[in-house]
Image 1 (cartoon, rainbow, N blue to C red):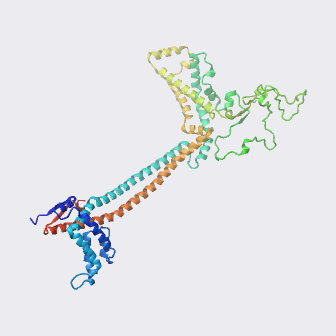
Image 2 (image 1 turned 30 degrees about the vertical axis):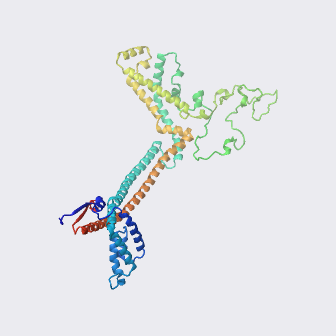
Image 3 (image 1 turned 180 degrees about the vertical axis):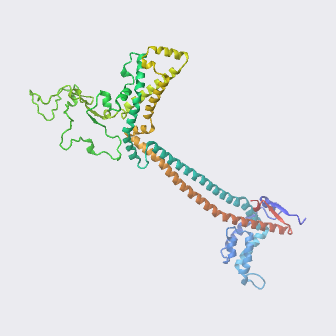
Length: 515
């Protein structure tokens, strides 16, 4: 019977001690007085390395007090009298503490509670905190990779956008505005491609006039036809049928210096000699009353005094039919044209209105050719009927084949695509809208800003990972120490219980070994 071990589950240790009447249920009431006594006794302790080591990182319990007394037996041996009693107050105080602990096994109960608390809470709590910090380091590694990947992605998007626009990406606004220098060359390429549309346009016109003879030529792709025949001329020439005498392009919509125009920019520049440059011949200025206003508006003869009843000099004949209507100045019977200003000074492709008309007419032509190719390729009965209806059409319509129409459609598509490229659409908007330039630059820079933020986040994540690693490393010695002291406390409790049962072995199950 004496060889049988006593197995006690650690979680049931306190209940076991109370049920076996080793401890009382209200043992904690006695502990309060003992703690006060310990706090008083610990104020006067000898400088001994064993005591410092004993009290480091642990709550003083009954077994610590026993060890302190063993140390004091050496440090206070000079105070021992003939009867074996110590005269040292230190020894008396700690002997009193041990005596209070032994009474009703209060020391065993407190140590048992400390063991249960360490096993169930302290050690798992520190381990959980270390695991959380290690998980934080893993999460930081994942976030670091995500930030690096996102930063690279945003820079790649920035580079792709710059390549798409033909930019180097160093000075965005300046480079964007320099792209406008490429427009004449791009327009020339579009005009060159558009030369292939003569036959498709002629085919379209012939077909529509055959189907509906009442349709006039000026109603059938007029702007596209004019563009193909004359090229990218000014809007003035497209509107009035003759080239302007002088072109005064509108001021640039975007200022590359981002500086406000000075006050002198709003004034007319008369040159050094103070004279107005009217070109090769003088113009007649009727003022605001030229279009049938008040008859009191006199003709400005430009410094020539004309008295009532006098005649105009013969060397300066004036054509009184020359008037300024809607901003057009017609000179010398209209043979030399006028001055193209504002939007009329823009080319057909530069002018948003005419460019939109050209694109719409290209789409109309492409849709017609697509439909004709489908109809001519249809071998069904309705297709045969359609072919029979074309017998009275002009030869230019009848001799066309489905393959030839598809070629025309492809040529039309090429011209249309050349006007709808991403880069060209950007250039159109850049030339006409300062706000668009700012938005475009802001959009591109935003990608770089995001990439920079991601890079900064990488450094922040590295710092968090470093802090988590340092905190976890600091907790490892603490965990090792508390496990060591808990294991020692478990052995002491097992030995104390064993003494109460005449040396029978005691095993506390679910203790430190199970953690």
